[in-house]
Figure 1 (cartoon, chains in turn blue, brown):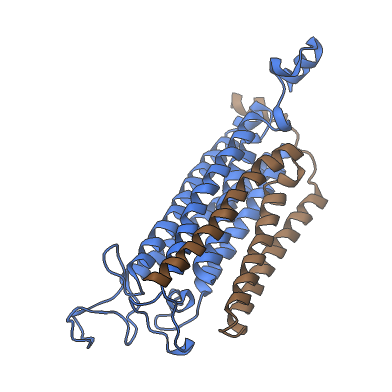
Figure 2 (cartoon, each protein chain N blue to C red):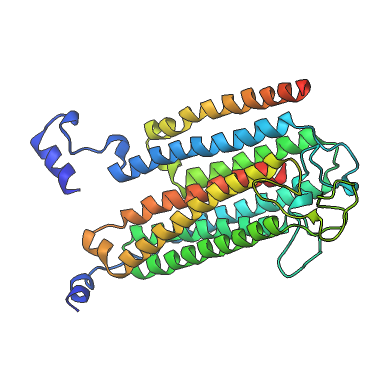
Length: 257
Length: 110
């Protein structure tokens, strides 16, 4: 603010510095353009999913009789139907629905922290940042469970890969779960894309949580009060909302369709 | 303690009630849309494939619009900033169409 006052006083032209292009601060502008580039990265991953999925045959049988096979792309809601503590119970998409709920709620608490920051309300910034951090950890915990279940396997009757080669699944010789070399749920690429896309998003969530913790700490020791503004909360907030935004797309294109 | 004395004079302004209730309302809309997606996923018949995909993609863009315009505050930035962010994403639209089409072509020669 001090710098813009000086620029006005000296009557210099726009290109002499001291003015903010697009009326946004340097940090916020750069965050926006970083997020644009990050959006291209995630688009690349999701478009890869679209390309590979549309180049594989779709499952044509009756919906209720679905059994995964290497021959066709799986129906996501048949794969992602497990919920913690309810082993063997099929509740399609319930757990990813919960993850979506958690991330949307943590986006709201983030924007409430930004609002409190505008009012120099340190107590409320800290409160809402803490809720955002808790939401972030809750999401990461859910994703850890989701991954471990995906890797360990469904254990469902008639599923799994027959390692014996005789077409009969037997205990001890069939393979359940998925990794980068084998995949119970369908074509190998399905598992690879699951690990890469949700993993890349999860990494973003993790780094977002780290940034949130740093901002929470700085708010609590009064760094932003001494600086005179809470703009750092806004910048980290932009990143956090972007992570939520990406999940909205991952949820639709990976799980729903 | 010196630190506390230095900062304790900062007075928080009263909460902007209208703004806060608007934010909660948007959160409600986002959760409602997600709920609607779930209902459609399990009530619409399986063979309405294209219809379902269009509904899900449409609703996703509604959610994205709310997050970007209100939570990320883009709607309230200058026009130039809005277009600087929105226009380059046209390339993504093109690439989705081009590569999904390409994928179907690959599948037909497999």
